[in-house]
Length: 283
Image (cartoon, rainbow, N blue to C red):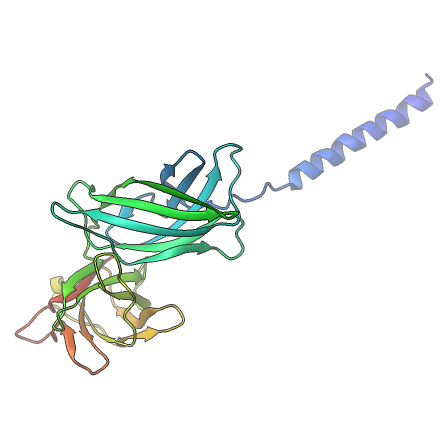
């Protein structure tokens, strides 16, 4: 082959390699749908494995926002269309009970991720005592999977379970802020009423008065706080929480029903430094 034919062929080959290299440099692989989340645990039956995720990779007492996906064990593909309910269960020496929960629903913009919430109001010192059962349906077929789980005790009181003056048991849990800042914070709290050992529906249209204090700093409060009021859009209670400095804060609360009757809690006064209903923050 003559040189005048060889050179164009070489040039074409080099150009092709260069283009291929440039295209590879620009290529970005698809982002995993669980990026930024930590695997907590896997629960399996003969057909599927359910993967549980959150930010920390652990369950803690209080409000847990949980992501999950279902993997088909026969082909390792993730299910994109499922109907899911779950039942957390605490086994006590003489009884068992559940806790407040929101069943998982498909996350908008995700193909395989479902998200729900569970409020663990207590645990054993070693994290034992809880189990989690899933009932789910795929293509008209019903499945069940269940296993024990570990729930660790949160360092601060981020949930309170108590008997109210109306002889009903309530659960109050802080949801936001997850990362408090100096200044104004969006405070979000869940309020639930125990209907029976298995059912804890959301309490609507009550009021939670808010009085944040710093016990280690003369029990001072902060300005611009608002009481927590019910938001029907997300079934949670919202308020402005003002934190003027870092450290340990007690959020003194008073739960009042629709008739302005006090269900639990007291005002903070010179003679009463802390309400019997409170949550804690430290940052």
